[in-house]
Length: 76
Image 1 (cartoon, rainbow, N blue to C red):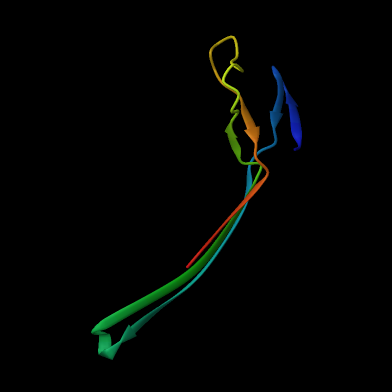
Image 2: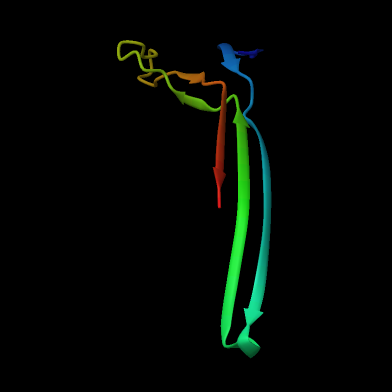
């Protein structure tokens, strides 16, 4: 995990993502029917999530976040 120094302590690096989508549309039977299809892929890195340790709370009552690595979603 890459961390960036900031006032008040260290913070996880910013979230990065890459998205790709491709799709087609078609009219069939002289326009009486339509069809669509698409594929997509989303990759995210440094996605922040709440730290799962319940007793880690800042003095002002806020909770902490950690970077979870990389996630990927695909669909059709």
